[in-house]
Length: 348
Length: 281
Picture 1 (cartoon, chains in turn brown, orange):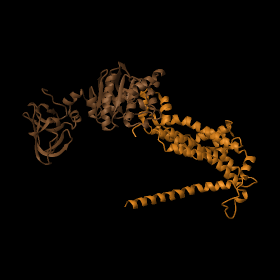
Picture 2 (tube, rainbow over the protein chains, first blue to last red):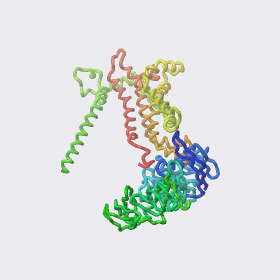
Picture 3 (cartoon, one colour):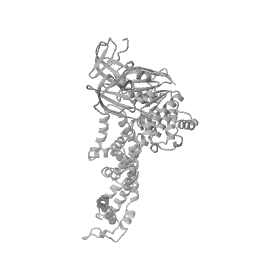
Picture 4 (cartoon, rainbow over the protein chains, first blue to last red):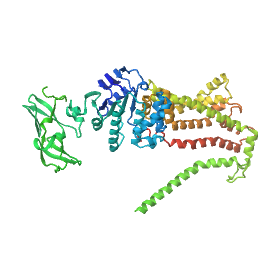
């Protein structure tokens, strides 16, 4: 069990900066998710914690110890990889045993611990198989068992579910969360899937272009985004971001109008989530562009001027395209961002 | 409609068999012909009309076993070849690992340099090598052949194994490292088993080249102490007896059989990817 502190971490590859001046405190037993688009530096950050990459600047502290100079093999960190990375020539039993052998765990304990770990991921009956003879989900569970078997201080998971199909992903997600709560091991989890991030995390770190955009609980990230990047990244469909102008307590853009704080002036961006919009109202005057029923709700896209606004409508909502339609916003859930994309908060 | 499709499919299959069968015949016929030459009397080898069905005879076999130490030649060949392959693998596996994984300055240049030694005409180094081995007192020994064969094939073996290692997902090593393994353990327990097909392929190719090596063997071997099958063949081409074709055919065949067995062995490994299942696939 350990806390992790990243102190002003920089990682450069020649002229390219992968991670820039990143500071982050990860609490003991916390489930932290690094979320961002591909190439945002989240995997690099994780690999630095694992010891597979060395930071160009800054310190990494695990369990109160600066580990910059400590090799990956000597850090008490277990990692689960996107491609499972099971050793193809070894049986599942030997795969799970490998970290125990490498770390000099007494041989007498091996069998008990391997079976315990395998049972935890419900893989007990596959121990004598080779990885090639398992399905994707089973391989991923084997990789998890290999990570938990040695009871490390820290779990690192690098997009562990991205190679699985949607249904399996959902069940593995629950399993991972349950396991983390059960073992109470500090966990850093990298993903580009916001649903995984929202469902798994105690706290989410949103990254873009090597820099942290926002750190917070899933609720904070969703309901209090710090900038347009975070607002546009979280939510499915994501928040509508509408460029327009503010004057005299009124936000206007072609076909769109909304109340805004009186002190706002000039070019700003309005953010409104599809779930905070309703059919009927006068905030958007446009035409129906598309209707997509999903069963439990209907996605409605409205064309207003050059902008398309997405709305979550009732599940029985239907309309033909090009029909005139009015949309209302929930005035309590409007977000405003300045030209740089940063959030303009009440009273600021 | 279906019937016509099926017919064309049947026809194309037939055509395929005809083409492949013809090609197989073209490849196999000389070998079979050779074999009949080995088992016919000398009088039936050079004739105005070819004799397709000879009077089978073991003349050549008796000649070989009575007048020539053919078992010794075979033993020399096997020893020199096997020894050279072992030397190659011991040197090439760590070299290939370093070339495929470690980041260091000039890595590509070193890799290319290693391969380029293969491109040199062997005759260029023949004389210096002769003196080198003479000074070391290794002339006319199987040990010298072992070293020579190993040196000739080392670049190729390194290069083949390296290309297999490049195909091993880096994640496997990262996983082993976070699991607590050091470089040598990773090489021994993860990398070598994962690229075993490549290692076997490289070893067989090296063995084939070594069995066929002639120039340096001729240079270094001067008596039956170090004569190998390839050089022994040359012994049947001169002297007062003239060219003894049936003996040549038989020795060639004896030299050819081990290669055939080796090739059949790698065929299985060539078509098999052992890393399958390691990473999503």
